[in-house]
Length: 251
Image (cartoon, rainbow, N blue to C red; front, side, top):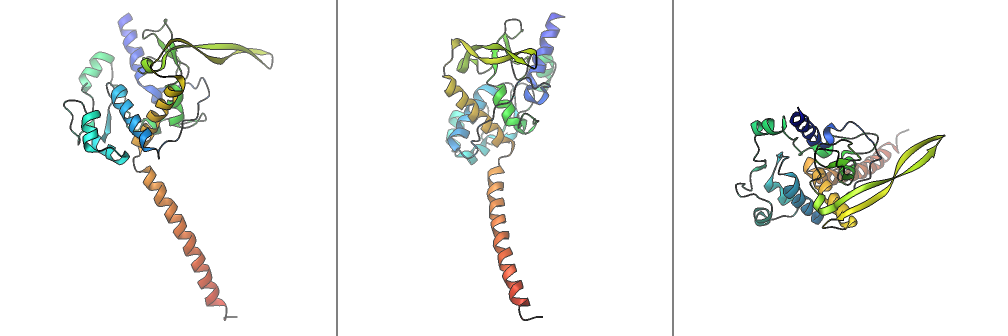
């Protein structure tokens, strides 16, 4: 029974933001780096190294990364696993049967994860940005980790080596005669490979990549939309002057 409960908790945690049911803290605003190719490239690198082990992106092909400025050689040398080809989709080696046997279900596909959750707290990108930055050590959990944005999460902190180990610090706040615990800050237990600022930037790059992956054509769509609006504006002016010229001698 204990093993069964541990497996269930891991499966629920692997649902990541798509199945989170509580907004326990305000979401931080995710940085918008969709036009920053270096940030998107770094985000792709983090995604392949840390996320693609368990979570597939089965609607994205590796060669589509050329759209963010990577060459085919860079993709082959830095982002492909041994058995992958540039034209392959971002699959994982774990098949459906293995996922069911090990976890009771497959970890969710992340291709559209940045678009799958939004709410009063913000966008899906805001949620993921907050989620990946609010992990903390909790020895009462099977994985040893918990999360402020997704309490009782079963998924471990896969980026902990970069961020280090932390614990939240709370303070009592009086509000309308009631005392509540509010997050005051963080205590660093052990340092990570990155400073807090560097880690936030890395997570911002990863979230921006997830946004781009969910809709690779969005930058082109926005640019085309701007040109269409400019064309309609100019055409409206021309049509207005033609109309005035046509009717000026008609009483």
